[in-house]
Length: 535
Image (cartoon, rainbow, N blue to C red; front, side, top):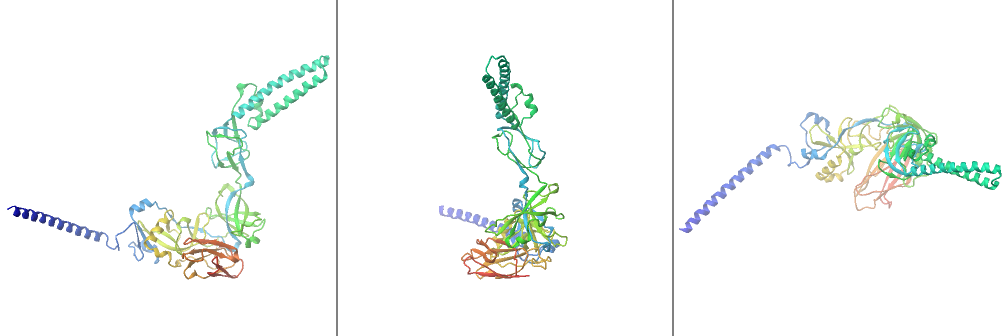
């Protein structure tokens, strides 16, 4: 009887377990079917980023913006919110006409001959600061005030000297009367006169010290008693100018001679550029120069070469050139990058290019790419472009991007990293020429020449590059093979030698001065390529 009861109990539990299993299978099947419907058209369940090399966007306006070689990357909504991407439109800027003369880049600096430090002559505690960076001040204007024990001590000495001088004056007048009466000798009278002159000299020195410490002559004339003393020292501007440096705050204890401010007259500024030695003949003392900047695309600034550094930097084979230019309304800011054209002017006939912030351009293997925003939220197109040299934070795009297209700037490296995770083979894939209606870098009258050379198992690719003489050139080398002697790149004819780290682009800039064939090679001169320069 007991065995029959146990058997019935086991059968009961077995039926319950079977029922639960059937319910679980049915629920799983239902969920799986719903997921298929919600993810129709997607090749795999989407991670944070998904690449669609062959995808065809549904939106008509999105399809019009895409190009055949674009690779689409999808960013999930939560990642899109956390990435904090910054997206900006490609802008237009006029390129300088290369026929106008030699071109280089430069940086705006203050005229060092018109910079003035502001130094207090007395130490003390800062009680007030009246100016901030960028303020324009006049000569004699009070910039800060100090509470100074040095000033108090100097005034005490001055009052003591005044008391002493009065005593010696009385002694001298008494000695004058006595010597006339014959009551004292001439020697005693002369000693009294000498003591008076000594005290007068000490009083003049004490007065002059107070003038140096910032007191005025009127204040000194009125200083007759200790209750008229003041420990406040004004720090005044020694010249008119703009405050370009401030290193003091209220409450600081400072010593005499510490620089509190720096003034600069910015009505005339310097532009400091670099010249290769083969270009020295084109920029001599007095050579006119035209300055342009993307900040003011419709405006030019003119000046002349005021200084050529007699020393050549041995690594880059360049020397500094200094151009002095007028700076109306202080439009040119210190540290601003500008374009410099010697012997000619920028013209309106220069071709336009799409310009993007420097951070928008990323390197993937031998390619330069940008990430273009599409009409579909969270979807970005990875596009191959041909970029020029960066100036003033902007990079010109000669091919692959249209004006007005919006590209990712801040955060573009995140898209690059995820793209490489999905397709690591991009690092070794050869670069493709970006399709565009814009002129190629090697057009009839290019602003500059650019080329990208990859070092792999077969050697330099391409092994030869055609250039034109007299046009600034920018060569970018990328080493993609680890076991090689090509850890350096040498252009012996141009005196250039640089390290070539693995998978890190290294850019070399120079201007070929004459036609001919010139080699580039590894540090051991085993791997070689050549530059074919024609007029």
